[in-house]
Picture 1 (cartoon, helix red, strand yellow):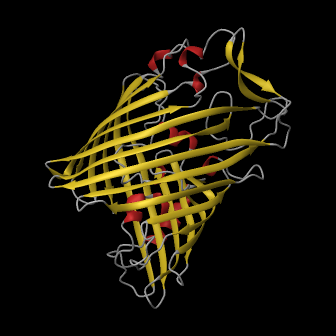
Picture 2 (picture 1 turned 60 degrees about the horizontal axis):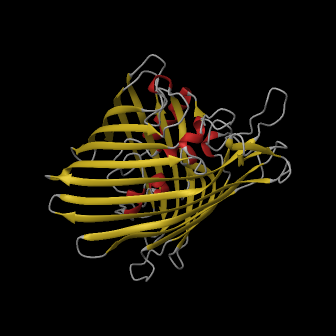
Picture 3 (picture 1 turned 45 degrees about the vertical axis):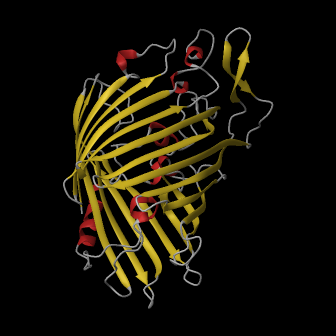
Length: 441
């Protein structure tokens, strides 16, 4: 949702609200797993607390070819192979009300993102806390989907400049409009204090569409293990996630992958097994784990995350549609059903001390696991570039000058699987260097 420049006046007015900015706030909700893990830090006002925070990420990028299509900050202009850009410019307002025992009763969050491309909303949600058992909370509004680890890791805390290709495609903008119930015991004596459970219903299209365009909702749930000490120096965390969603079948035909005697594997129109008004599946399953070893240099961390499932989308893209597209004759564009999988793997190592960190990241996204690269683009079939598997290797160095300033140097090597399809001007196999400074308050 785009915000017009004149609305910045309202933000400036909010900035003068008297608040105790020296205090840390309860939780950063699902936008950031790391701050979620920090728990409820000092709150200096007895009943109410307002916090204003934010960050900016100016950066310079150099690509191996002009005009590449990419997930490292967006496509380059046709004749450009380098650019300065403001990747993110976030400002966030948090309000919390505590009871007389200093327990949270409710929380409201507004977050905006402003760059040279415009101003957009990111978080608009409220949370109500249950204080009888001190275990439950109810959240509603626009907030990040409770699926996986990388989706919920804040862009200000994430070591790589961007999330992996799969999460950017299947969970575009990360957020959705809905409601969620959370189970997370807050008493230090609880036997289940290391567990965190979310379950919610969401529209499905997230920030890619302005309105809900069908009556189906996505169920998203996760069971997470918060960092638990295995030894004095070693901690383990992880989780499993499920998304059970769907799209409304609006065209009489749905395209499914079949094997043809002449052209091999091919998408074939199916008008017998589904009818307009039926449910087209979007079903994802994921699991993740994180192992962190603290030592005299800082820490060594290994993260792994894997997703697989069924995605209903369009012929030339595998993103979830933000609306139902229509053909010139008024008929709805038919859906294509694909099986997918993918992964994100991080290795992070502090060197010398905690201010210096090197990282290696590998991610892949295979939008159509039922076909190989050699099947895509063959004469006689309708498989296309949307069915190609991509592999990305990222190498990086981060310098944490202090808790407010960090510098990132990151190099991505992107390759699609080999296929008969041409690679015009190296736009599917390319390299990008990103140099970024982040400042936050």
